[in-house]
Length: 130
Image 1 (cartoon, rainbow, N blue to C red):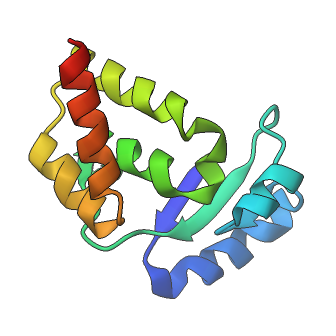
Image 2: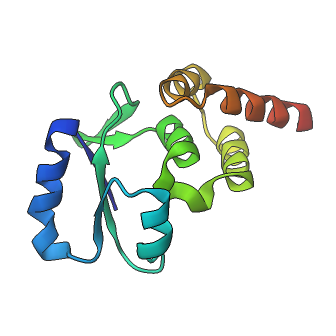
């Protein structure tokens, strides 16, 4: 489970949840922490700051990430190391073929996360192969 919150309260949220989820809760894990300590076969909680201007939607008044946000975050965040590389290209290809991906929103957020060039390259790869 991912909990993304305002940067100012990230540590407070982590500390509030720590007693109940000790050993299964992580705050902004690096790739080394993620690969060493997070067991993907078990339920874990990752608390990290929400990137400003991240594309969100409302579901029953609860903010949830858009598909565009997920496609970019899985490409750049260390805790998604296992989905990067070829896996991420395939996720992008599948998302575009099955869902209405807002490419402007995708590229705007990718630019904020310094991933715009790699997303553009993958979009061109996908278009060339179709």
